[in-house]
Amino acid sequence: MERTDILGKLVTNGTVTTPEALTELASEFDIPAADLLVIAGHPVPADLLPPERNGGLAKEFAHRVSHCDHAQLAELERFVRSRPRLKASRPFVQPTSPYVTPAESGLGAVLNGLIRNRGFGVRELPFVALSRSTLHRMVEDWGPSPHRRHQVCAMAGVLGWRLSDLFAVFGEPYSPDFRPTVLCRHAGRVFEAAVPLSEAQVAECAREAERLSARVSRGAWRPVSQGFVEECPDFS
Image: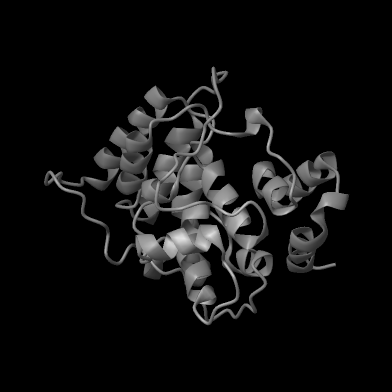
């Protein structure tokens, strides 16, 4: 069975697959085990979640990563993965917002769980070319929509997923003509690598991202308008 078929079936019938089998499948597919547990409707153990993390720090880290080109992202990922893994004192709790109530089931819950697995809430995500209100609707009730393929393209980069895999999860037909919108999966791989890191280590990685990108701080949040998607080796 094709991997996209397997991923699609996990969404509708994943609870019959044991967490142990999902962990093995995650290793085979090079997808975080926490993500497959979310997709299959299983709880994610605390040891697979990020440690307790400040929302402002998470947002700053994500923003600085978004300024790195592909060579810089590769170097940054190596730096992040070289940090020692420390035992977390308390697991991450996703920040809440008075403006959104995430779904408890369905594709909205899946998307919110994937965001949570990386130590983010909607407000902590880097710029992905979607409005905050659109993101809120997506985690509340991500039903069928003519816009959903564009939305998948926008989110795949943050999550570090291949487009074809994420399209399968969210039940959308995939074409090789689709491209990430602003960020590609190489930015998301940095966020995946940082999952086990403490707040102090995330702050250190944010400083390294700033050093690599040579971003000049102007005292205000300014999103990357285009990203480096056109340079992505996945589509060269």
